[in-house]
Image 1 (tube, helix red, strand yellow):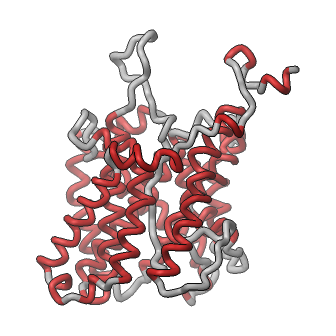
Image 2: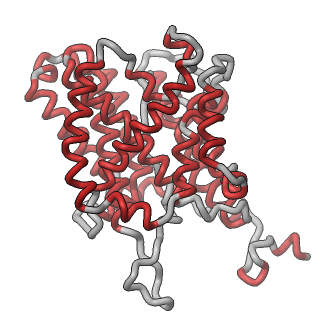
Length: 371
């Protein structure tokens, strides 16, 4: 299986943010900026997956792949943390966590297991809900991060503590695959940073000075990535292995944790600076990024099974461009309303039957408990 990065439906039902023009009596509206950011990021995720089979034949493709992987996952996780600030482990929030994260995780963990038995030619692959398969790792990590949100909202230095935990994880090769804990811990600082951010922080990166600076920064990053490919293992950006895996001294792990965190933050800021703040033709698709994320993996796996990358045309410059555009088109379709209606029963199930009834007057306390 290839390493993947996903987007997030982090702000799925909690992304409804008031806009300056909203009156108290009107329904809250979604923030177009964050929906635009999520859509553009999921397009980059799909394009990155499309580039994976082409890396061995093109240094340029691999350089672009590395740059994208340096910031698209951190961007999703930061936004996830930002919209998790209100998580307080109340019954209503726990219900949303289960229906919006746990249920899709279980469904797609099973679905990917059966599908990859065919696509990977592994007919005896076992179903393991503790060992996330393919794209489902992000849902497992999001579950852990969300549950720990009250802790990070309470401690005095949340980000330094999270960075310390991530650095220590790189020193611990014995961490097992349960819930992909290594990756969960190494990506933790981005989630905690999102918890610490405020709307004014996002306004800062959208200033015209930042937008102008983002162009040479991205250009220099691509050039540096091209130069560094023979000298550095880009798998560091996957955050899934301890330092020992890369055959380097253990102290490299904490050092790379800080270096990658700084690098990713700069690129995330550059990316967000160019995200439109107004409603665009793709803004509504930002509400369906979890659908695009989880569903496009089946297309990627099927394409790998049929070895589309084995065709000579795919390895030409025009072929690579065509593959990139097709990947963007496929994930765009998977984020649309018709697709969401079909799969809502497993992605956003109501499941009223599984939870105790609550009322606004009870402060979220189940009626059965109050009795």
